[in-house]
Image (tube, rainbow, N blue to C red; front, side, top):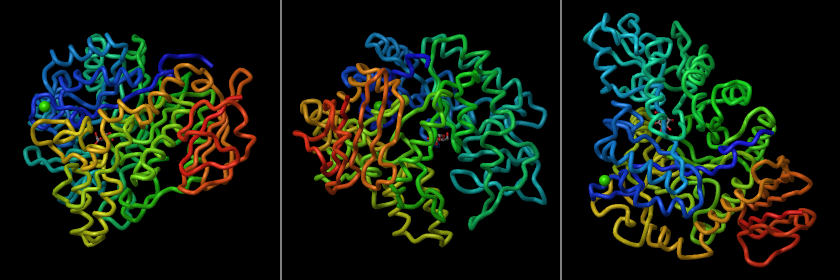
Length: 550
Ligand code: GLC
Ligand code: CA
Protein backbone atom coordinates (compact mmCIF):
# COMPACT_ATOMS: atom_id res chain seq x y z
CA UNK A 1 0.00 0.00 0.00
CA UNK A 2 1.28 3.42 -0.91
CA UNK A 3 1.72 5.82 1.96
CA UNK A 4 0.39 9.37 1.75
CA UNK A 5 0.19 12.30 4.16
CA UNK A 6 -3.56 12.54 3.83
CA UNK A 7 -3.89 8.89 4.89
CA UNK A 8 -1.97 9.64 8.08
CA UNK A 9 -3.76 12.86 8.92
CA UNK A 10 -6.63 13.74 11.25
CA UNK A 11 -9.01 16.45 10.05
CA UNK A 12 -10.84 19.00 12.18
CA UNK A 13 -13.96 20.58 10.70
CA UNK A 14 -14.79 24.19 11.47
CA UNK A 15 -18.26 25.60 10.88
CA UNK A 16 -17.15 29.24 10.96
CA UNK A 17 -20.51 30.76 11.82
CA UNK A 18 -20.58 28.86 15.11
CA UNK A 19 -16.91 28.64 16.03
CA UNK A 20 -15.77 31.90 17.59
CA UNK A 21 -17.02 35.47 17.28
CA UNK A 22 -14.28 38.09 17.57
CA UNK A 23 -16.32 41.30 17.23
CA UNK A 24 -19.51 40.74 19.19
CA UNK A 25 -21.98 40.63 16.31
CA UNK A 26 -23.06 37.13 17.33
CA UNK A 27 -21.56 35.45 14.26
CA UNK A 28 -18.34 33.48 14.24
CA UNK A 29 -15.63 34.90 11.98
CA UNK A 30 -12.12 34.41 10.63
CA UNK A 31 -10.42 36.47 13.35
CA UNK A 32 -12.24 34.24 15.82
CA UNK A 33 -10.75 31.17 14.16
CA UNK A 34 -7.29 32.74 14.22
CA UNK A 35 -7.64 33.32 17.96
CA UNK A 36 -8.26 29.60 18.45
CA UNK A 37 -5.53 28.18 16.22
CA UNK A 38 -3.40 27.25 19.21
CA UNK A 39 -6.32 25.29 20.63
CA UNK A 40 -6.61 23.34 17.38
CA UNK A 41 -2.86 22.77 17.13
CA UNK A 42 -2.75 21.56 20.75
CA UNK A 43 -5.41 18.98 20.00
CA UNK A 44 -2.88 17.54 17.57
CA UNK A 45 -4.88 17.47 14.33
CA UNK A 46 -3.18 18.02 10.97
CA UNK A 47 -5.78 19.58 8.73
CA UNK A 48 -8.63 22.05 9.10
CA UNK A 49 -11.63 21.70 6.82
CA UNK A 50 -13.24 25.09 6.67
CA UNK A 51 -16.93 25.12 5.83
CA UNK A 52 -17.67 27.93 3.32
CA UNK A 53 -16.34 31.39 4.11
CA UNK A 54 -17.11 32.86 0.69
CA UNK A 55 -19.45 35.75 -0.01
CA UNK A 56 -22.99 34.56 0.41
CA UNK A 57 -26.47 35.86 1.20
CA UNK A 58 -26.67 32.99 3.69
CA UNK A 59 -29.83 31.31 2.61
CA UNK A 60 -28.03 28.06 3.47
CA UNK A 61 -25.30 29.44 5.75
CA UNK A 62 -22.66 29.95 3.10
CA UNK A 63 -23.49 26.92 0.95
CA UNK A 64 -25.07 29.44 -1.43
CA UNK A 65 -22.13 31.37 -2.82
CA UNK A 66 -22.45 34.70 -4.60
CA UNK A 67 -18.72 35.26 -5.13
CA UNK A 68 -16.17 32.45 -4.97
CA UNK A 69 -13.24 34.82 -4.76
CA UNK A 70 -14.43 37.04 -1.94
CA UNK A 71 -14.96 36.47 1.78
CA UNK A 72 -18.37 36.83 3.42
CA UNK A 73 -18.60 40.30 5.00
CA UNK A 74 -19.70 38.84 8.32
CA UNK A 75 -16.62 36.61 8.41
CA UNK A 76 -14.05 39.26 7.55
CA UNK A 77 -11.90 40.12 4.55
CA UNK A 78 -9.51 38.41 2.17
CA UNK A 79 -6.68 39.87 4.28
CA UNK A 80 -8.12 38.02 7.28
CA UNK A 81 -8.19 34.85 5.25
CA UNK A 82 -4.60 35.27 4.12
CA UNK A 83 -3.59 35.83 7.73
CA UNK A 84 -5.44 32.67 8.75
CA UNK A 85 -3.68 30.62 6.10
CA UNK A 86 -0.23 31.90 7.09
CA UNK A 87 -0.87 31.41 10.81
CA UNK A 88 -2.28 27.94 10.30
CA UNK A 89 0.71 26.94 8.17
CA UNK A 90 3.05 28.43 10.80
CA UNK A 91 1.53 25.97 13.25
CA UNK A 92 1.86 23.04 10.90
CA UNK A 93 -1.86 22.99 10.13
CA UNK A 94 -3.12 22.58 6.58
CA UNK A 95 -6.40 24.09 5.39
CA UNK A 96 -8.83 22.50 2.98
CA UNK A 97 -11.67 24.64 1.70
CA UNK A 98 -15.25 23.75 1.00
CA UNK A 99 -15.88 23.81 -2.74
CA UNK A 100 -19.56 24.34 -3.50
CA UNK A 101 -19.92 24.06 -7.25
CA UNK A 102 -23.01 22.00 -7.86
CA UNK A 103 -24.84 25.30 -7.49
CA UNK A 104 -24.25 28.96 -6.79
CA UNK A 105 -26.39 31.53 -5.03
CA UNK A 106 -29.08 33.14 -7.17
CA UNK A 107 -27.23 36.34 -6.27
CA UNK A 108 -24.07 35.23 -8.07
CA UNK A 109 -23.30 37.49 -11.04
CA UNK A 110 -23.41 34.49 -13.38
CA UNK A 111 -27.01 33.86 -12.39
CA UNK A 112 -27.95 37.53 -12.48
CA UNK A 113 -26.78 37.52 -16.10
CA UNK A 114 -28.27 34.13 -16.90
CA UNK A 115 -31.79 35.10 -15.96
CA UNK A 116 -31.67 38.32 -18.02
CA UNK A 117 -32.54 36.69 -21.29
CA UNK A 118 -32.53 33.53 -23.35
CA UNK A 119 -29.59 34.85 -25.42
CA UNK A 120 -27.46 36.03 -22.55
CA UNK A 121 -23.91 34.64 -22.73
CA UNK A 122 -24.39 33.18 -19.24
CA UNK A 123 -27.78 31.61 -20.02
CA UNK A 124 -26.33 28.12 -20.28
CA UNK A 125 -24.35 28.42 -17.06
CA UNK A 126 -27.52 27.11 -15.39
CA UNK A 127 -30.18 24.53 -16.14
CA UNK A 128 -33.25 26.11 -17.74
CA UNK A 129 -36.26 24.27 -19.13
CA UNK A 130 -39.67 25.09 -20.60
CA UNK A 131 -42.75 24.43 -18.49
CA UNK A 132 -45.24 21.76 -19.46
CA UNK A 133 -48.93 22.73 -19.66
CA UNK A 134 -48.35 25.70 -17.40
CA UNK A 135 -46.54 23.53 -14.86
CA UNK A 136 -42.91 22.80 -14.01
CA UNK A 137 -40.88 20.78 -16.56
CA UNK A 138 -41.27 17.67 -14.43
CA UNK A 139 -42.35 16.49 -10.97
CA UNK A 140 -38.99 16.66 -9.17
CA UNK A 141 -38.99 17.76 -5.54
CA UNK A 142 -36.16 19.80 -4.02
CA UNK A 143 -34.13 18.12 -1.28
CA UNK A 144 -34.97 21.14 0.85
CA UNK A 145 -38.74 20.86 0.29
CA UNK A 146 -41.10 22.15 -2.40
CA UNK A 147 -40.57 21.78 -6.14
CA UNK A 148 -37.05 21.58 -7.64
CA UNK A 149 -37.98 24.03 -10.41
CA UNK A 150 -38.52 27.75 -10.01
CA UNK A 151 -40.46 29.73 -12.57
CA UNK A 152 -38.77 32.86 -13.85
CA UNK A 153 -41.20 35.35 -15.36
CA UNK A 154 -38.67 37.35 -17.30
CA UNK A 155 -38.00 34.59 -19.82
CA UNK A 156 -41.00 32.38 -19.09
CA UNK A 157 -38.83 29.37 -18.22
CA UNK A 158 -37.91 27.35 -15.13
CA UNK A 159 -34.50 26.81 -13.53
CA UNK A 160 -33.45 23.73 -11.61
CA UNK A 161 -32.46 23.86 -7.94
CA UNK A 162 -31.85 20.59 -6.09
CA UNK A 163 -31.53 22.63 -2.89
CA UNK A 164 -33.28 25.91 -2.10
CA UNK A 165 -34.58 28.16 -4.85
CA UNK A 166 -31.74 30.50 -3.94
CA UNK A 167 -29.29 27.75 -4.97
CA UNK A 168 -29.67 27.30 -8.75
CA UNK A 169 -27.75 24.30 -10.13
CA UNK A 170 -24.83 25.00 -12.44
CA UNK A 171 -24.82 23.37 -15.86
CA UNK A 172 -21.66 21.28 -15.88
CA UNK A 173 -22.32 20.15 -19.44
CA UNK A 174 -21.29 23.66 -20.46
CA UNK A 175 -17.54 23.72 -21.02
CA UNK A 176 -17.44 27.38 -20.00
CA UNK A 177 -18.80 26.48 -16.57
CA UNK A 178 -16.12 23.87 -16.08
CA UNK A 179 -13.40 26.27 -17.15
CA UNK A 180 -14.71 29.02 -14.85
CA UNK A 181 -14.81 26.61 -11.90
CA UNK A 182 -11.37 25.19 -12.64
CA UNK A 183 -9.89 28.69 -12.92
CA UNK A 184 -11.38 29.61 -9.58
CA UNK A 185 -9.98 26.44 -7.98
CA UNK A 186 -6.56 27.20 -9.43
CA UNK A 187 -6.71 30.69 -7.98
CA UNK A 188 -7.28 29.28 -4.48
CA UNK A 189 -4.64 26.59 -4.84
CA UNK A 190 -2.12 29.18 -6.01
CA UNK A 191 -2.88 31.08 -2.84
CA UNK A 192 -1.57 28.05 -1.00
CA UNK A 193 -4.59 26.18 0.34
CA UNK A 194 -4.11 22.45 0.80
CA UNK A 195 -7.13 20.94 -0.87
CA UNK A 196 -10.90 20.83 -1.16
CA UNK A 197 -13.89 19.19 0.42
CA UNK A 198 -16.28 19.07 -2.51
CA UNK A 199 -19.90 19.74 -1.65
CA UNK A 200 -22.45 17.31 -3.17
CA UNK A 201 -20.02 16.68 -5.99
CA UNK A 202 -21.88 13.52 -6.96
CA UNK A 203 -24.79 15.65 -8.23
CA UNK A 204 -23.06 17.74 -10.90
CA UNK A 205 -24.16 15.74 -13.94
CA UNK A 206 -27.88 15.35 -14.68
CA UNK A 207 -29.70 12.89 -16.92
CA UNK A 208 -30.84 14.83 -20.00
CA UNK A 209 -34.50 15.12 -20.84
CA UNK A 210 -35.54 15.41 -17.16
CA UNK A 211 -37.79 12.34 -16.82
CA UNK A 212 -40.32 12.40 -13.98
CA UNK A 213 -39.20 10.85 -10.69
CA UNK A 214 -40.94 8.19 -8.67
CA UNK A 215 -43.55 9.54 -6.26
CA UNK A 216 -44.04 8.18 -2.76
CA UNK A 217 -46.65 9.63 -0.42
CA UNK A 218 -45.40 13.16 -0.98
CA UNK A 219 -46.27 15.73 -3.60
CA UNK A 220 -43.09 15.44 -5.62
CA UNK A 221 -41.07 12.89 -7.53
CA UNK A 222 -37.58 11.80 -6.52
CA UNK A 223 -34.83 13.45 -8.57
CA UNK A 224 -32.03 11.39 -7.03
CA UNK A 225 -31.73 8.68 -9.72
CA UNK A 226 -31.37 11.39 -12.38
CA UNK A 227 -28.92 13.63 -10.56
CA UNK A 228 -26.71 11.43 -8.37
CA UNK A 229 -23.73 9.89 -10.22
CA UNK A 230 -25.12 11.20 -13.49
CA UNK A 231 -23.84 10.24 -16.94
CA UNK A 232 -20.76 12.53 -17.05
CA UNK A 233 -19.76 12.94 -13.41
CA UNK A 234 -16.62 10.81 -13.65
CA UNK A 235 -15.59 12.37 -16.93
CA UNK A 236 -15.85 15.87 -15.40
CA UNK A 237 -13.91 14.88 -12.29
CA UNK A 238 -11.15 13.35 -14.37
CA UNK A 239 -11.02 16.56 -16.34
CA UNK A 240 -10.83 18.51 -13.08
CA UNK A 241 -8.05 16.26 -11.90
CA UNK A 242 -6.10 16.64 -15.09
CA UNK A 243 -6.55 20.38 -15.45
CA UNK A 244 -6.24 21.35 -11.77
CA UNK A 245 -5.81 18.84 -8.96
CA UNK A 246 -2.93 16.82 -10.37
CA UNK A 247 -0.75 19.93 -10.46
CA UNK A 248 -0.66 20.28 -6.68
CA UNK A 249 0.22 18.16 -3.64
CA UNK A 250 -3.20 18.48 -2.07
CA UNK A 251 -5.96 16.42 -0.58
CA UNK A 252 -9.49 16.07 -1.89
CA UNK A 253 -12.59 14.61 -0.34
CA UNK A 254 -15.85 14.50 -2.22
CA UNK A 255 -19.16 14.71 -0.44
CA UNK A 256 -20.60 11.90 -2.50
CA UNK A 257 -24.26 12.15 -1.53
CA UNK A 258 -26.06 8.82 -2.17
CA UNK A 259 -22.83 7.02 -2.97
CA UNK A 260 -22.73 3.24 -3.21
CA UNK A 261 -19.58 1.21 -2.77
CA UNK A 262 -19.37 0.59 -6.51
CA UNK A 263 -19.61 4.31 -7.23
CA UNK A 264 -17.12 5.18 -4.49
CA UNK A 265 -14.54 2.97 -6.15
CA UNK A 266 -14.92 5.10 -9.24
CA UNK A 267 -14.63 8.45 -7.44
CA UNK A 268 -11.75 7.46 -5.20
CA UNK A 269 -10.07 4.44 -6.80
CA UNK A 270 -6.28 4.83 -6.78
CA UNK A 271 -6.10 4.23 -10.51
CA UNK A 272 -9.00 6.52 -11.42
CA UNK A 273 -7.42 9.99 -11.20
CA UNK A 274 -10.53 11.63 -9.82
CA UNK A 275 -10.54 12.31 -6.05
CA UNK A 276 -8.42 11.05 -3.13
CA UNK A 277 -11.38 10.13 -0.96
CA UNK A 278 -15.14 10.47 -0.60
CA UNK A 279 -17.54 10.73 2.29
CA UNK A 280 -20.08 7.94 2.26
CA UNK A 281 -23.20 8.36 4.40
CA UNK A 282 -24.70 4.94 4.96
CA UNK A 283 -23.89 4.88 8.67
CA UNK A 284 -25.44 8.30 9.27
CA UNK A 285 -28.36 7.96 6.90
CA UNK A 286 -29.89 5.72 9.50
CA UNK A 287 -33.35 4.39 9.14
CA UNK A 288 -35.55 6.10 6.56
CA UNK A 289 -39.14 6.45 7.77
CA UNK A 290 -42.24 7.55 5.84
CA UNK A 291 -41.01 11.13 6.24
CA UNK A 292 -37.55 10.34 4.86
CA UNK A 293 -34.78 11.44 7.23
CA UNK A 294 -37.30 12.78 9.75
CA UNK A 295 -37.47 10.02 12.31
CA UNK A 296 -35.88 9.21 15.65
CA UNK A 297 -35.24 5.56 14.90
CA UNK A 298 -31.69 4.27 15.20
CA UNK A 299 -29.74 1.67 13.30
CA UNK A 300 -29.04 -1.45 15.33
CA UNK A 301 -25.41 -2.00 16.28
CA UNK A 302 -25.11 -5.00 13.97
CA UNK A 303 -26.34 -2.89 11.06
CA UNK A 304 -23.90 -0.13 11.93
CA UNK A 305 -20.97 -2.53 12.18
CA UNK A 306 -21.77 -4.21 8.89
CA UNK A 307 -21.72 -0.85 7.15
CA UNK A 308 -18.19 -0.12 8.42
CA UNK A 309 -17.11 -3.64 7.52
CA UNK A 310 -18.56 -3.39 4.05
CA UNK A 311 -16.76 -0.12 3.36
CA UNK A 312 -13.46 -1.26 4.74
CA UNK A 313 -13.47 -4.54 2.85
CA UNK A 314 -14.88 -2.99 -0.28
CA UNK A 315 -12.24 -0.26 -0.53
CA UNK A 316 -9.36 -2.46 0.63
CA UNK A 317 -6.50 -2.02 -1.83
CA UNK A 318 -8.74 0.02 -4.15
CA UNK A 319 -9.10 3.36 -2.42
CA UNK A 320 -9.00 5.05 0.97
CA UNK A 321 -11.93 5.56 3.36
CA UNK A 322 -12.97 8.52 5.46
CA UNK A 323 -14.26 8.12 9.01
CA UNK A 324 -16.72 10.40 10.76
CA UNK A 325 -19.57 10.35 13.26
CA UNK A 326 -20.79 13.86 12.66
CA UNK A 327 -20.50 17.08 10.71
CA UNK A 328 -22.53 20.28 10.27
CA UNK A 329 -25.37 18.31 8.63
CA UNK A 330 -25.68 15.64 11.32
CA UNK A 331 -26.75 15.66 14.95
CA UNK A 332 -24.12 15.41 17.68
CA UNK A 333 -22.35 12.05 17.80
CA UNK A 334 -22.70 11.43 21.53
CA UNK A 335 -26.44 12.15 21.45
CA UNK A 336 -27.01 9.95 18.45
CA UNK A 337 -24.71 6.96 18.89
CA UNK A 338 -23.79 7.23 22.58
CA UNK A 339 -25.60 8.38 25.70
CA UNK A 340 -25.66 12.08 26.51
CA UNK A 341 -27.02 11.71 30.05
CA UNK A 342 -24.68 13.22 32.68
CA UNK A 343 -23.80 9.74 33.90
CA UNK A 344 -22.55 8.34 30.61
CA UNK A 345 -21.78 11.30 28.37
CA UNK A 346 -18.04 11.34 28.88
CA UNK A 347 -17.63 7.59 28.84
CA UNK A 348 -19.69 7.12 25.73
CA UNK A 349 -18.09 10.06 23.90
CA UNK A 350 -14.65 8.55 24.57
CA UNK A 351 -15.90 5.14 23.50
CA UNK A 352 -17.20 6.53 20.20
CA UNK A 353 -13.91 8.34 19.63
CA UNK A 354 -12.01 5.10 20.21
CA UNK A 355 -14.25 3.12 17.91
CA UNK A 356 -13.76 5.55 15.04
CA UNK A 357 -10.16 6.66 15.50
CA UNK A 358 -8.74 3.14 15.70
CA UNK A 359 -10.26 2.20 12.33
CA UNK A 360 -8.62 2.34 8.93
CA UNK A 361 -9.32 5.59 7.05
CA UNK A 362 -8.85 9.32 7.56
CA UNK A 363 -10.79 10.46 10.66
CA UNK A 364 -12.72 13.72 10.85
CA UNK A 365 -13.61 15.54 14.06
CA UNK A 366 -16.45 18.03 13.91
CA UNK A 367 -15.93 21.09 16.14
CA UNK A 368 -17.03 20.39 19.70
CA UNK A 369 -17.05 16.63 19.23
CA UNK A 370 -13.70 16.62 21.04
CA UNK A 371 -15.54 18.10 24.03
CA UNK A 372 -18.42 15.66 23.84
CA UNK A 373 -20.87 18.43 22.95
CA UNK A 374 -24.50 17.28 22.81
CA UNK A 375 -27.60 17.93 20.73
CA UNK A 376 -29.30 21.26 21.31
CA UNK A 377 -32.68 19.58 21.45
CA UNK A 378 -34.60 22.80 20.77
CA UNK A 379 -38.27 22.44 21.76
CA UNK A 380 -39.68 25.41 19.84
CA UNK A 381 -39.67 25.95 16.09
CA UNK A 382 -38.55 29.58 16.61
CA UNK A 383 -35.26 28.31 17.99
CA UNK A 384 -34.38 26.62 14.71
CA UNK A 385 -32.38 28.44 12.04
CA UNK A 386 -31.79 25.71 9.47
CA UNK A 387 -33.93 26.08 6.36
CA UNK A 388 -34.03 22.32 5.78
CA UNK A 389 -35.52 21.79 9.25
CA UNK A 390 -37.95 24.70 9.04
CA UNK A 391 -39.14 23.75 5.54
CA UNK A 392 -39.66 20.14 6.57
CA UNK A 393 -41.65 21.17 9.62
CA UNK A 394 -43.90 23.41 7.53
CA UNK A 395 -44.34 20.88 4.74
CA UNK A 396 -45.18 17.95 6.99
CA UNK A 397 -47.15 19.67 9.75
CA UNK A 398 -49.24 21.92 7.51
CA UNK A 399 -49.65 19.05 5.04
CA UNK A 400 -51.10 16.97 7.87
CA UNK A 401 -48.47 14.22 7.58
CA UNK A 402 -47.04 14.75 11.07
CA UNK A 403 -48.21 16.44 14.24
CA UNK A 404 -46.34 19.33 15.81
CA UNK A 405 -45.18 17.08 18.69
CA UNK A 406 -43.94 14.40 16.33
CA UNK A 407 -42.02 16.79 14.12
CA UNK A 408 -40.38 18.54 17.10
CA UNK A 409 -39.37 15.13 18.41
CA UNK A 410 -37.66 14.36 15.11
CA UNK A 411 -36.02 17.78 14.89
CA UNK A 412 -34.63 17.36 18.40
CA UNK A 413 -33.03 14.13 17.32
CA UNK A 414 -31.86 14.72 13.77
CA UNK A 415 -31.97 18.43 12.82
CA UNK A 416 -28.74 19.91 11.48
CA UNK A 417 -29.06 22.72 14.03
CA UNK A 418 -28.11 20.26 16.77
CA UNK A 419 -24.54 20.51 15.54
CA UNK A 420 -24.67 24.18 14.70
CA UNK A 421 -25.05 25.67 18.16
CA UNK A 422 -21.99 27.72 19.12
CA UNK A 423 -18.76 26.13 20.22
CA UNK A 424 -18.62 26.08 24.03
CA UNK A 425 -15.36 27.75 25.06
CA UNK A 426 -15.83 28.55 28.73
CA UNK A 427 -18.25 29.12 31.57
CA UNK A 428 -19.05 32.69 30.54
CA UNK A 429 -22.16 34.22 28.97
CA UNK A 430 -22.93 32.40 25.71
CA UNK A 431 -20.24 29.88 26.49
CA UNK A 432 -17.60 32.46 25.58
CA UNK A 433 -18.58 32.23 21.91
CA UNK A 434 -19.68 35.85 21.61
CA UNK A 435 -20.08 39.00 23.64
CA UNK A 436 -23.21 39.81 21.65
CA UNK A 437 -26.34 37.84 20.89
CA UNK A 438 -25.50 34.58 19.12
CA UNK A 439 -27.17 33.94 15.76
CA UNK A 440 -28.41 30.64 17.17
CA UNK A 441 -28.88 29.83 20.86
CA UNK A 442 -26.01 28.36 22.80
CA UNK A 443 -26.64 24.92 24.30
CA UNK A 444 -27.63 25.43 27.95
CA UNK A 445 -25.06 22.91 29.17
CA UNK A 446 -22.01 25.10 28.44
CA UNK A 447 -21.29 25.50 32.15
CA UNK A 448 -20.47 21.79 32.43
CA UNK A 449 -19.21 21.18 28.89
CA UNK A 450 -16.61 23.65 27.64
CA UNK A 451 -13.08 23.86 26.32
CA UNK A 452 -11.61 25.73 29.31
CA UNK A 453 -12.68 23.00 31.72
CA UNK A 454 -11.66 20.16 29.48
CA UNK A 455 -8.25 21.40 28.44
CA UNK A 456 -7.39 21.72 32.14
CA UNK A 457 -8.61 18.21 32.97
CA UNK A 458 -6.41 15.23 32.09
CA UNK A 459 -9.43 12.94 32.27
CA UNK A 460 -11.70 14.88 29.89
CA UNK A 461 -13.11 13.90 26.51
CA UNK A 462 -10.74 16.49 25.03
CA UNK A 463 -7.69 14.91 26.70
CA UNK A 464 -8.81 11.52 25.47
CA UNK A 465 -9.23 12.70 21.86
CA UNK A 466 -5.79 14.25 22.05
CA UNK A 467 -4.41 10.88 23.05
CA UNK A 468 -6.29 9.10 20.24
CA UNK A 469 -4.78 11.50 17.71
CA UNK A 470 -1.30 11.13 19.19
CA UNK A 471 -1.54 7.35 18.98
CA UNK A 472 -2.49 7.46 15.31
CA UNK A 473 0.55 9.59 14.61
CA UNK A 474 2.81 7.20 16.51
CA UNK A 475 1.53 3.79 15.53
CA UNK A 476 1.55 2.83 11.88
CA UNK A 477 -0.73 -0.10 12.64
CA UNK A 478 -3.56 2.38 13.32
CA UNK A 479 -3.10 4.00 9.93
CA UNK A 480 -2.11 1.13 7.71
CA UNK A 481 -3.09 -2.09 9.50
CA UNK A 482 -5.69 -4.44 8.03
CA UNK A 483 -9.18 -4.47 9.56
CA UNK A 484 -11.22 -7.43 10.67
CA UNK A 485 -14.57 -7.16 12.42
CA UNK A 486 -14.97 -9.42 15.47
CA UNK A 487 -18.16 -10.46 17.28
CA UNK A 488 -20.15 -9.51 14.20
CA UNK A 489 -23.49 -10.63 15.62
CA UNK A 490 -23.18 -8.86 18.96
CA UNK A 491 -25.74 -6.10 19.50
CA UNK A 492 -23.65 -4.76 22.39
CA UNK A 493 -20.01 -4.82 21.39
CA UNK A 494 -18.23 -3.22 18.44
CA UNK A 495 -14.93 -5.11 18.31
CA UNK A 496 -12.29 -5.37 15.62
CA UNK A 497 -8.73 -6.38 15.01
CA UNK A 498 -6.06 -4.50 13.11
CA UNK A 499 -2.91 -6.26 11.90
CA UNK A 500 0.38 -4.87 10.65
CA UNK A 501 3.91 -6.20 10.45
CA UNK A 502 3.32 -9.11 12.81
CA UNK A 503 1.41 -7.11 15.43
CA UNK A 504 -2.29 -7.18 16.32
CA UNK A 505 -4.39 -4.40 17.76
CA UNK A 506 -7.69 -5.33 19.41
CA UNK A 507 -10.30 -2.60 19.71
CA UNK A 508 -13.22 -3.30 22.05
CA UNK A 509 -16.16 -0.95 22.46
CA UNK A 510 -19.26 -1.49 24.55
CA UNK A 511 -22.17 0.42 23.03
CA UNK A 512 -24.50 -0.20 26.00
CA UNK A 513 -24.87 0.87 29.61
CA UNK A 514 -24.75 -2.76 30.79
CA UNK A 515 -21.75 -4.90 31.58
CA UNK A 516 -21.18 -7.32 28.74
CA UNK A 517 -19.07 -10.42 28.43
CA UNK A 518 -16.07 -10.08 26.18
CA UNK A 519 -13.65 -12.89 25.31
CA UNK A 520 -10.45 -12.66 27.37
CA UNK A 521 -8.50 -13.67 24.30
CA UNK A 522 -9.04 -10.16 22.93
CA UNK A 523 -7.52 -8.54 26.03
CA UNK A 524 -4.25 -10.31 26.28
CA UNK A 525 -1.69 -7.80 25.18
CA UNK A 526 -0.77 -4.44 26.55
CA UNK A 527 -3.44 -1.77 27.07
CA UNK A 528 -2.87 1.07 24.61
CA UNK A 529 -5.78 3.29 25.61
CA UNK A 530 -9.04 2.89 27.50
CA UNK A 531 -11.74 5.03 29.07
CA UNK A 532 -11.74 3.30 32.50
CA UNK A 533 -9.11 3.21 35.17
CA UNK A 534 -8.04 -0.32 36.07
CA UNK A 535 -8.55 -3.27 33.76
CA UNK A 536 -11.36 -5.79 33.80
CA UNK A 537 -10.58 -9.03 32.03
CA UNK A 538 -13.69 -10.87 30.93
CA UNK A 539 -16.29 -8.10 30.85
CA UNK A 540 -16.64 -4.69 29.30
CA UNK A 541 -18.11 -2.15 31.69
CA UNK A 542 -20.83 0.34 30.60
CA UNK A 543 -19.62 2.16 27.49
CA UNK A 544 -16.14 0.85 28.06
CA UNK A 545 -13.57 1.17 25.29
CA UNK A 546 -10.24 -0.59 25.46
CA UNK A 547 -7.47 -1.10 22.93
CA UNK A 548 -4.82 -3.80 23.29
CA UNK A 549 -1.71 -4.57 21.30
CA UNK A 550 -0.01 -7.95 21.00
C1 GLC B 1 -24.10 19.74 1.40
C2 GLC B 1 -23.73 20.55 2.62
C3 GLC B 1 -24.98 21.09 3.22
C4 GLC B 1 -25.66 21.97 2.21
C5 GLC B 1 -25.89 21.23 0.88
C6 GLC B 1 -26.22 22.19 -0.21
O1 GLC B 1 -24.84 18.62 1.73
O2 GLC B 1 -22.97 19.78 3.51
O3 GLC B 1 -24.74 21.79 4.41
O4 GLC B 1 -26.89 22.41 2.71
O5 GLC B 1 -24.75 20.53 0.47
O6 GLC B 1 -25.10 22.94 -0.55
CA1 CA C 1 -18.35 38.18 14.26
